[in-house]
Structure formats: structure tokens, C-alpha cells
Image 1: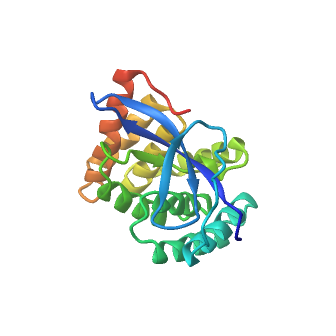
Image 2 (image 1 turned 90 degrees about the vertical axis):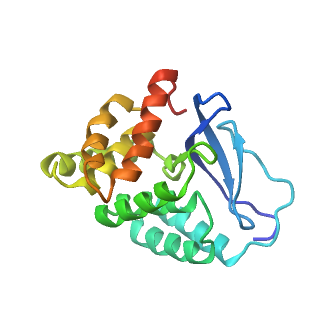
Length: 212
């Protein structure tokens, strides 16, 4: 892979110095860890001269390829391996959680998402949404619809509510995200992660911002 780069986009909300929340697309170049995610416009930024890829880079690249092909089992396995080699990566857990969701492993996806949200500082890193893994947004919409059906049927399941609220925020459905996140907030295990997302949702509403 010498001389090659592998980019995909995570969409996130980041905080300005005045506390306002703004949407941004990050071009994530998986060549060299720790992750160097540069704030970017939605058009692809070409890196200058990439360094030799690490083991984690290789696993990540295989995961992204598998995800785009709809092979979510392989994507889950490769993201998990990449995380073992890059445990401090702030973006990778969100991509891993998205692969688990795509594979309809909702409990596992919620566990990973909850852990990631509890570790980040929204004011510093922002909250990431791995929409760039999808070559077609319609696929994401169908996956969210399937999750919504289950979350609606099992409204007592706080993990499903957290996951659903997070997905709704990621596609800009801020008002719709409030109800499931409020339900997740009532659960002790999910309270911290749900509060991160609820706080973010409120700031988005005040600033009238939506993800790009």
C-alpha cells in the first residue's frame, strides 16, 4: 500500500470556543496511528505522501471495503482487530459500533457506543457519526428503520433507545432523537452516554445546526 491512502468520512458535531455546536466532515486517513483526523470539507482531501501502513491500518481498510460490499460480519471482525492495535483511536469505536448495527448486533453496538461516548470529551473531540462508511444513504436509512421497529417494540430496552437516538442525531433528526435518548437516560447503565447525546441535541437545537 506504499503511496496509497484510504479515506472515508466521519461526520461529527464539534464545539466552538463560545460553546456553539457546528457540524463538520472529517477526512479520516488510515495511514499511521494514532489517528490524525483533519477537519475538512466534504470533498476528499488527498494526503501528500503517506507513510507505511500499520497492522491496524490494514485491518481498517479491509473493514471499510467489507462494509461497502455489505459483508458486515467481515467488517465487524476487522474493525475489532483494528481496535486492538489502536486502542486510543477516538473515531474507530464509532465505526465499529456502526458495523455492529449494520449486522443487527444491537446489544453489542450499544455497548461499544456507550463506552465510546463515556470516554470522549464532546467539547474537545466532538461526537462522531460514521455515515461515510455507506456508499448509499438509502442503505443507512433502511438499517435505521429496522432498528426503529425493534426499539419501538421494546421501548423498555435502554440499549436500543440509546442506539436509535444516536442514529437519529447522525442523520439530523434531532427532535426525533430526544424521546429515545430521554428513555435511555432513565437507565443507570446508559445515563452518562445518553446525557452526552441529549446535551449535544439541545445545543444543536439552540444553534439550529444540522450535520452536513
